[in-house]
Length: 415
Image 1: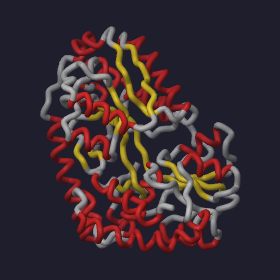
Image 2: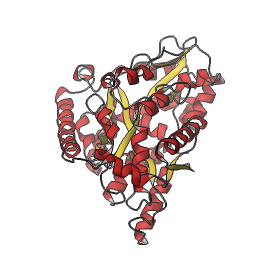
Image 3: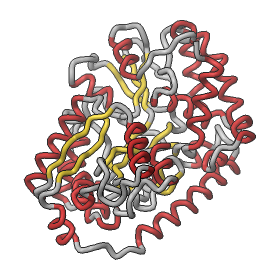
């Protein structure tokens, strides 16, 4: 997946602003890479021996049958290979788990007396756990499979919402804002915010986005914010009130003009992206959105959408990030959690996860660097609905921007 190219944005943003943003990201990456290379790593066989017989409680979102089935496959694999028992603790919101770990720390449940061994996390929740000392020691240097992670072309594997991971979470999969529609109804999909607004004007009531603070709805807001802001460099830093007012003003102007042309005249919004996809299938909407570039292909394979559905991203780039797994400071089965995190990065597990028929979650690995036999695991033809040309990735703004964006959106537009 290509990263942010200056040439792609020079027509949309001030050149110096992009350069300043790159400089900020480069400094963060340099610090993170230095951390990753200064640890020799422990004896993996000793750690795997410690993990044998342990039970790992993996707290992970359970809103997808495909994802739940994949985690069950992982559980069988780590039991067979390492003697580790993996229990999927099914949750609706990872923020609830963060609050539980925080409460455990406040109650003095340190070291190995916690209830969470491994958790699926990223963004503002990771930032909060890192800030509050809720994570254990860095562990990615202990993962033999981390060497296959593509930290060059996918630098968001080392930076989570502009916060350096510092080895405290291991990358698991890639995500990027992607739109999809039926090519029979939208033969020329919008490639930027201007053409998106034009399509909404042409077909009133047929476009929308999920209601924030739904994750996908907030992501759409961040996309608008990045694409309209006068200086993108500001988003690498914590949000101040002054910066927020200046940087988001163009976004609110765009939304004020867009909303009257949206579904129900922008007075109401679907609660989730899944609801939008169902409305697309029912013919009520023309466009849906996702953070998984293979979502439409998954829906087509499941017979929920027709094969004429196509996926695309805005030409200059869309918001993208990496999702991770992390280990809390008081994980009872830390060795087992590290073994599971390493297996999740194995070419076998990453290739299965990337398979459209299984999950379709893009890999974090540098597939071209894998041995031939492992590269072959990723080979396969393009499926109907699958994204065929990825746009540049726009890195997430600093996690502190999220809460401010959501609260201001609610103040302005909530009904």
